[in-house]
Length: 254
Image 1 (cartoon, one colour):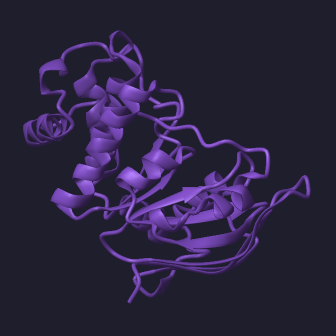
Image 2 (image 1 turned 120 degrees about the horizontal axis):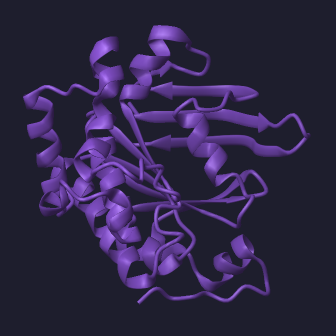
């Protein structure tokens, strides 16, 4: 059984944009799946449909064989706990410490009053320190987030997502705002989660050099349609032109 299965998934926005067109896709447990395509091809919409941040227009989303396309309330909250997500913009509380930002990833597991007052028990604080150790930032626990580099902030975001104990981590252009060296630093930690901890990763990326280095499988979207599925090394120059256009030139991230 696939971990995630999309069947004829469509998303049409109110302005008429058909962002996803009959997308059929399966994701196996333990994969590092990379999604590529031009800006506006539907990559972010795909991830947001998977974690139900947005509602698909039609089609189905199955998780371990269960239809989660239109679940609501408690069922949706339980489902989202299994799906961690990190964004290009980090979405951190800039004036708070690294540790507090990581702890916010556990708010969903706390009773209402402690979560409002940000009273985290010792076991959660210890767990947060362990997540920081995984991403190499345990020595920054008491530093304000706005004093960190972009790459360090993204690693804090990864640690925060780990606090919800996700089975899947969705990464939406996680290195788009970072320089090449920092991009590799962040991608290496995502790969570590995949190889050392068995976490399933679905990651939107632009640069094929990163795709080839870190991905186990790649799919390509073009105008909302899934046009390629295969191994990273199977993206030939011809496929690159088909995905990105005849005038496109591949840029390497060294």
